[in-house]
Image (cartoon, rainbow, N blue to C red; front, side, top):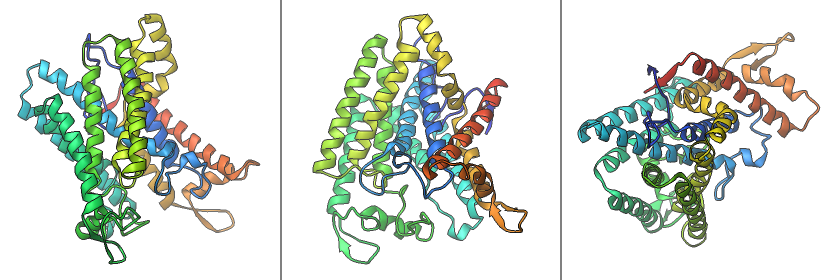
Length: 399
């Protein structure tokens, strides 16, 4: 990574589709997503969480389950806008794909290094991860975005979701208990978990060991989520008036929410760990609604005075969004240090750095869930100070 002009969990340089103006709404939405990730990833006590700040145990969804698909949606939007600018500048298609692949591989390597830092054990290091899946989605989406037209991209989305459904529901696979089943959608029993054990045994999520929420097969519907963001980017880059763009973001978002709920009832339940088609569509619906709101407030309003006021209100999110990948990686390193480093107290007992920092908040006369949330809010504030300092000095990290 190097100091540059932008940093995202997606190919950066996503300027506005018109007038060469940067889209504040995309930066703010990215910043909202990274702030939400920091909030849900860094509580004071994992045993005491408000329900929306924890992932759904299996089927279903919570606020926390919005974060990852929001990142992939932003990846898709950013790819479209970034490649559109370069195409106008006469960029060669093969060169564009290679640049995207380079960025994808860089993100994958960063994710692997973050996993390695957790225990410095190559033999037992977890291979899948959030950044690894984001990198794989960029890697696979790059040629589709560069070479395929709108109809082909829609066909890819439908094919990925349909193909994944057929594989998961019809292809028998031995579960973690060794029993051969088809259509099993329980932890460790599905086809995806079997493939992960077959190819990555010993390198899966430590809390399950027999399956991984960022497993290989689930990358297929996650790629569809990314391509849905690509379609949103195509619409954003079009010539329609901002009010019309905003209206269709909401219409498409509500339609995706309804379709996702229906598929969750008749096909496969909404499930993040399996990244079911219902989950991919449902979360894309929320992404469209959230982003549509940011777009109208920050970029779509006809009043310049309104946009200026909104920019001031949403500036903290824009600051977060300008260095998203750096903040993602730094927060992971800080969290690892917090759970690894030991502090010796005056009574001679040893606690982790995280426990030591959390103790004064834990001692407050408030509910344990509120104390845990307060610690997370303090962590988000600390990370914002870092982001603000980098923004003020114009230090933007780009891969």
